[in-house]
Amino acid sequence: MGFNLIAIIDEFARLKQIKREVIADIIKDSLEATLSKKLNPNCELSVEINFDENKVVAKLSTKVVEEVKKNFDEISIKDAQKIIPTAQIDDYISVEIPISEFGRKTIQSARQAIINRIRESETEKIKVDYEKQKGQIVSGVVKKVEYNGYIVNIGFTEGLLPTEEQIETEFYKSGDYIKAYIANIRNQKGRVRVILSRRRPEFIIKLFESEIPEILDGYVVIKKIVREPGYRTKVAVYSTNKNIDAFGSCVGPKGMRIEEIKKELHGEQVDIIVWSENHEQFIKNSVGNELVKRVYLADKGKFAQIIADPKNKNIAIGKGGKNIKLAAKLTNYKLDVLLEEEYEEISANERRITSPIFELEGVTENIGRILHNAGYTSVQDIHLASIRELCQIEGIGVKTAEKIKESAKYF
Image (cartoon, rainbow, N blue to C red; front, side, top):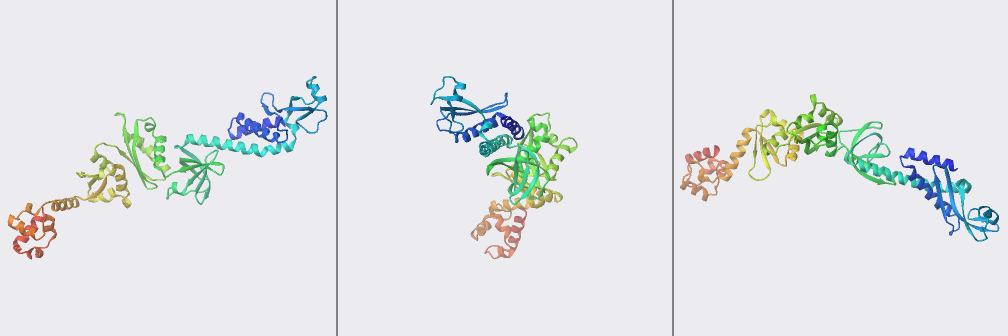
C-alpha cells in the first residue's frame, strides 16, 4: 500500500501539475484525520511519507498493556519489551506502523477527503495560474453551447464566453477554435470558471500587441480605441520615436499585419488613426482625411462641423452613421457632416439670429424702429417673414419689404 501511495502521489502531481510535496501534505493530513478517529484521543499520531525510501508509515504513541484489546493504540508488554527492554505496564512508547496494516476500509474512508482536498488545491492552483493571465488572450476549443454562452476548453479548466461578451455577428459550434480575452476569474460550484470576451476593446489592444512588435516594445502607443463590435473599430496611435511611422507599423508590409487582425475579427473594419494634438487634424484623421475638405471648430464647447463633397458625405457618415459616431467617440467632439452649401446656410442662419435688424442693408433708423416695435428684432425674423406679412406693418411699403427681404436672404 505504501508503494502504491507513493505512485499515486507522483501520478497526481504529473496529471494535475501540482507539486508532489503539496499532494503528499494533503494525503498526510487526510490520513491523520481518518486514523485519529480510531485511536484514543490522548494518542499522539503523525503520518510520514518518505519519497527516498518509498515508505508511508504512521508514527503513534501506544500504551503498554498486559493484553491488547484495541488494534493500534495499545501494545502488549511482551512486544513492548522487544522494543524497549525496560518497558512497564501503562508506559507509552512510540511505534511505526505501515499504512497498509490499518486495512483497506480505513484507507478507503480517507479517500474522499483526499480527493476533495486535492480538488481544492487544484482549483486554487488553476485560479492563481489564470489570475496571472488575466488581461491576456487565450486560445481554446468550443466544448459546447449553453443558454448563457459558449463553454470553451482552454487547457486546465473551462472558459465561458457569455452572451454579453460575444459579438452578435459571430457564431460558433462545438469543435471550433477560438481566441478570446480573459476578462475575469470566478469560482463556481467549487471550480474555476474563466470569463472570456471577444467584445471588449482590450481584446483589440492585445491583438495589436501580438501582431505589431513596435506596440509591444513601446515605440508605437495606442492612445485610444473605440469599437462597434463586429462592424468597425477605430484605433488612435502615435509614435514615441520620430524614426518610426505609427500608421505604417500597424498596417505592416503589404498590409499583412492589419489583415491578420481583421481575419481574427472575421472581417470587422479596423481603422488606424494617427493621433494629433491638433484637434482639427485629429478629427480629419478620425473621419477619414481623404473624405474631409475642412473642419470648423465651435468657439465654445466640443462641437465641430465637417465639410465634405457630395460624393464623400455618405461615406464620411458611414453605414448606419457608425463611422461618424465612432469618430465622435474617439475625438470627444460632437460632429456634424455637411455639404458646403449646407454649412453656408447654417452659418447664415446663425448670423441672422445673432444680428439685429439695424445691421440689415436698407433698414434706416426709422424703419428699424418700426420693425422693432412690431416684434422683428433680428435679421432672421425678417428672413422668415413673408413680404405680405411685412407689408401689413404700418409704415412698411412693398418696395421696402422686398428690399429688406432680399438683404436678409444674402446677409
